[in-house]
Amino acid sequence: MTWWILRRLGQMLIVLFGVVSLAFLLVYAVPADPASTLAGPNASAATIASIHKQLGLDDPLWQQYFGFIGRLLTGDLGTSYVLRETPVFGRIVAALPTTLLVAVGGIVWQIILGVPAGIYAAYRRGSWVDRLVTFLSLIGLSAPPFWLGLLLIYYFAFTWGLFPLNGLGSPVFWYLVLPTFTLGAGGGAWYARMTRTNMIETLDSPFVRMARAKGMPEHVILWRHSFRHIAIPLLTMIGLDFGYFLGGVVIVETVFGLNGIGRLAFDAISNLDTPMIVGTVLFAAIFIVVVNFIVDLLYSVIDPRVRLNS
Image (cartoon, rainbow, N blue to C red; front, top):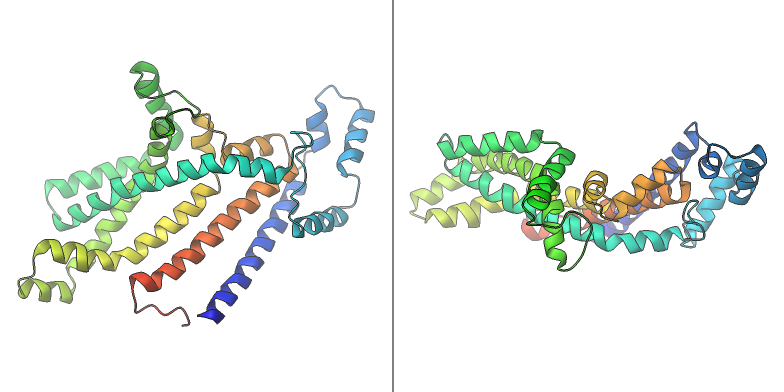
């Protein structure tokens, strides 16, 4: 167990180093000049040259890279080009609670919408309920998040006035209903299809037939025994989605005017704000690898047959 944890931590550090290095190099591979973007279209060559010098963009690429890595090892992500004298780390930490709330809400909607529907559709396979769940799942998977978000805003916020239009306020829960539903609707459709497929396979297994032959109640077979067999793939999907959501959901945060990490990354890319771009990418990578690490640990809790040392 200890060796497995140490090995995974080493793998996580290698992944994070590779992600940060790749993000840094790709930003500089873009055929655009951050200094020109910051100076504006009517700036003189002298102004652009001055900004180049202030930001250290005149240094060779390798020197900028090693300087960035050196600062990163001390916990310094640099200063935003656009938000002058604003530390990247502090700005990302300030945006984190919003993204965390949206991510948790999206996961909750995915589970509520997808898992019970998939289980019931599998239990009643071939019935009208099964066909309805399959049809609604197809619609959910096909609906673009930006379209669904704008539709919800128009009807539920603007036309009927049931929810706030955008941003966050008090009570926070009321402001998060529409964005979290937008985020979780597509995932809920995918969870329903995945849960249905895995549950059908489990219900056809020999141990379920044996349990029925012994007269075990259906609800015990369904929830205590069958559901446990689909818990590991379901947990894997939840872990991947949670890491992705925490990395920042650009579309949802932009449509609903939420100042989260996704919106921060979008603005940074639009302004070629290199330190902010690399910082948001690093945070997204950290969330993904950490959540996957936690999910791997939970495998052995859900299924004792899983041994981490192997």
